[in-house]
Length: 405
Image 1 (cartoon, helix red, strand yellow):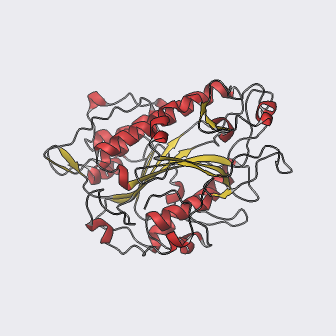
Image 2 (cartoon, rainbow, N blue to C red):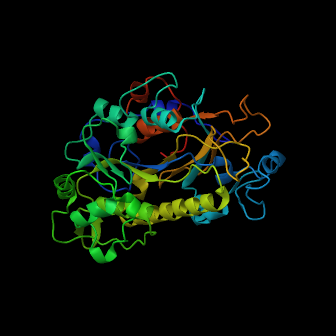
Image 3 (cartoon, rainbow, N blue to C red):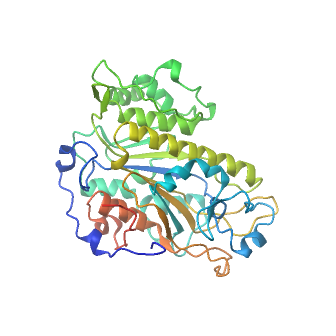
C-alpha cells in the first residue's frame, strides 16, 4: 500500500509462528528482528473520531479549500510532507520522527459499509468484526487466547485512561485503570512530588480500593532501587497515562544505572478523549493534536531511554474519521476513512495507503476506505508477533509493509 512500492505478501507469510516462552527468553533490542510478545504494542485511541483531513492535509487539492472554507488548515501554516500532503501545524513535534523515517502515516483507513454510530463503530474496531457481524471478544483478547502470553508476564494488557477494555474485552489477564495517577502512587512507580494533579473528570476508578492495591502490588518493583525516568512528560491526563505506562515498563531492576525491564506486558492501550468535534473545531482540534504529538515524543524518548524503542510499535486508531464538508457550526460530523500513525524503531517511515480522493466521494459525501483497518491488526499479529492473523481476524488481510525486518 506504500505510494512507491508494496512488498510482497510472502515476506510476512514466511515468518515462523511465535512459540510460547521463546520471545521472553530474548533480551535487548539489538540484533536481527524476531517476532514475538517481547515486541510491545501500544495502541493510542483517538476517541470520538479524529478529523483525518485536518490532521494529514491534502493541501494541493482545490476541493479541500472548497469543502472547508472556514475550518481548513491554511496552506502557509501546514507542514509540507510532499507535493500534495502536509501535517497540521500542531503536529510539528513529530517532524524529527518523520525525518528519521520512524513514523509511518497510513491514509484512507476504514472499512466497507461504514457505521457512523460511535458505539457500534467502536465495537467494530475493537472486535475486528464485519459491519453485519457481532463478536463478543476484543481482537487482542482473541489473539492472546489463541497464543497465550507467557505466564511470567505481569499481564497480557494494560489499559490506562479509559474504563473500557476495548480490543482487550473479555481477556483473562487485563489491568484497567481509569486514573493512572492513583495506580502509579499505590505501586510507588512515581512519587507524590512528581505527580500532576489528577483531573477531576477522571475521578471514576476501580470500584474497590483493594482492587487498586492488588493491581499496584503486581506492578510494584521488587527491589528497593527504582529507575527514575529522565524523560519529561506533558501535563494532563494523557501525559499522566503515558508516564505511568513508561514507568511500569521501567519497573524492573537497574544494572549500573541502566533499566532492565522486569515482568513483561504484551500490549498497552492509551486513550486521548475529545475528538468528536461537531462545533468550534479549529482550536479544539489543534489542542488535541498538540497533546497527541507531545505524548508521542515523550513515549519515544522514554522508550529510547529504556532500550525499548526498537521493540515497540505505536499504532493510533479511532472509530471513524469526520465528514469531508464542514458544518455550519465550524465543525465536522461523523465521517468514514481517516489517516492513522504507526511509529517505532523498526518502522519504515513514509506515506502509505490511499490519499484522499475528494472528487470521488461516496453517495453520502464521505471518503471511501482504501485500507481496511484490519490490515493494521494483521501487521501486528503477523510480522510483529508472529501469530496466525487469519485465525484471529477470521479472514485474510494483507499486512502493511511498514516494518523494517
